[in-house]
Image (cartoon, rainbow, N blue to C red):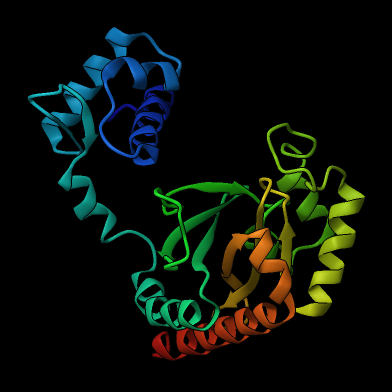
Length: 256
């Protein structure tokens, strides 16, 4: 019988790959080891093993590591690709209408995981949100994923993040506050996070549903407070309409 995988090793491999995914370019072994919190020699051996499979690549000149093309090929087959393909033109249309960056996210454990981004020409951000996870209670994308959840389900999902440091000045810090906000947003059909995740950032989100009516993703736009708050009502209308279009398109693509 094959032995079960060492979950600690799996977790370390996942941490290394996630660290490289979040980087803007190559990373030296020392930087990866520091971010993962492991010995340099241990991470070096792991990277060599991953490089042998093509999941990471090493630049022969700089000796830095980056994600490999083999991982890109695997990622192309991950998740619901019909959702991504269907969402792309809808996100582009939303960017054209609002001139703000549009994102598509899905639930991943107790996080909102961004799988697609259409960037606005107004965006000055060099990096991207794709592949990043965010707390559910302080993001428009996250709370949109929670709109159908019960109070107990919400408590279980967000308790570990409530009161954590490093969020924006308007971050929600208690369960009653989060539940009250979600109740209000459930009535409106959209979510607004005003400097909750980080200072100067506002986001508007809405849920995307499958053919059975279950929330499977969230669509949102985000931008600087100075622009977003001036047009929050029109942006909310646009995001809800885009989410409805994606919901309808999803239902069509999943018909037998």
